[in-house]
Length: 311
Image (cartoon, rainbow, N blue to C red; front, side):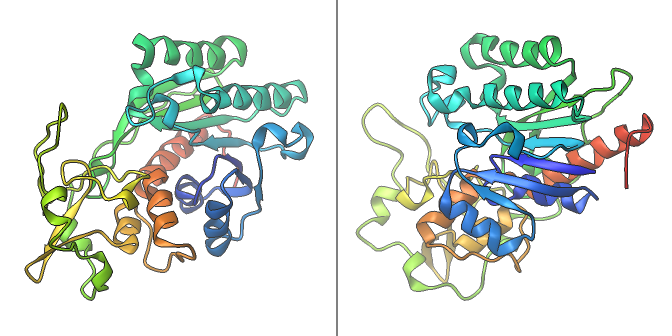
């Protein structure tokens, strides 16, 4: 099944679908460093540029369209401005692309979108209601939505995300993948030989391990068995109540980019061609591969059941 991937980042969503037997024929992202990492790891054709400026006729027809559209407008860290944020309006570009495909009688059989958990409750549920109405009433899709946690799909990271799965066939009956027992903990993913630059200095250690300042108070914990959600601003080294820190050889350190890659389900042969700062951003924004793969398999099962799967 041919897949078009929007807001591809470093390809977490794409890899999950490729692993499940799909073929990504075209991808796009606005961030040049994410595109650099994507190109270093996949043979798929990724186009660097603003999706709003790419002509509709340059986006190929496909059976499946996927996209982890920008989450910052709907997240707590991003201020929750929603559709008031320019990035929040990118959902409407997805809808525009789908309308163009429908107009050409090339409607994708399935659409899979990913975003932060808060998308479902943002603006007292009105944001998601708008998205669902457009997908169902305007575009004619049968829509399913649920929260999926990376820790319930094989990865020791508490990472709750909203998945929206849509089918053109109204007879399609879809079930989200069931949770699986977590067999690994964060410590299983740690590197043995770590560069000294990742260890905390005596000067910064009290700040990192404090429980907050001013009106913000939260318990700082390190050496968690299941990691906190990786965030795109890890390079700033927040307190241990927000970012992940571990003890090694009697010293406290932050996670390495490779460990962050592992916490997002990327194999160790995944190439990291960018700076640590960019790598932290990319893995913090990424879709967990294991969750993507599980969703892709469930979507494939549904398409097979309605006779629409193509090898």
